[in-house]
Length: 95
Image (cartoon, rainbow, N blue to C red; front, side, top):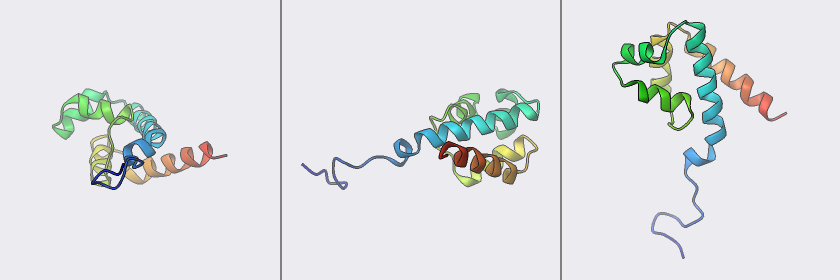
């Protein structure tokens, strides 16, 4: 039986990208640690609760480009460096 939203076989984008979101979180943790910052320090710079950043780093919350740029800025890191590292990790995963 189909639902009014396209069918029972629909899978959320978050579910489809679960592994990739975990890798993104790992990349962000490494970037934060390289910047010698705690989650709470980055969250304070963003004026958001630490749980916000925790969910991203654990891969349980999606992240849009604007948020990525804001997080990178809070860590005094170039967002392009984060994207390059993420791209490298994703390519390694598919080998």
